Image (cartoon, rainbow, N blue to C red; front, side, top):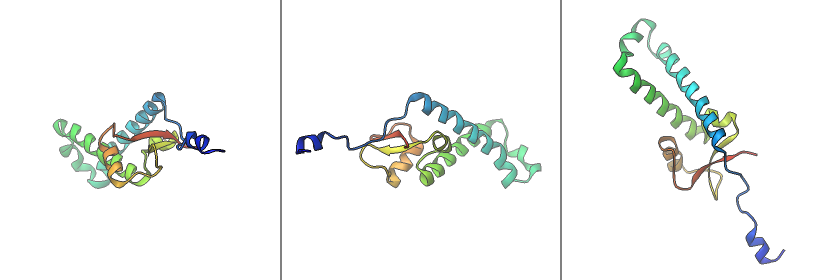
Length: 122
């Protein structure tokens, strides 16, 4: 193989994840967040006091905090959410497989990050 053929070979062999697969993973993650939001008060707060903390103005903030904590912990530990893990794709950059801590934190809070995309696992 000459130098020109070697240069034209693809460096990154993973393929990008399709939109349908991303949406299904989002629905799975929403189910996990809903289950976490319904079961964590019973784990951390005794059953009699749950209703006074989860009133109507606080319920949206509560689900949002559970969602952020869920995404942050799963992306920092697994480089993907549980829905992404079930469907076998994760966050990667175009040149490297492993993300830095900074890229993982940004991926947890933002949908689109420069250079970080979803790729199918082999």
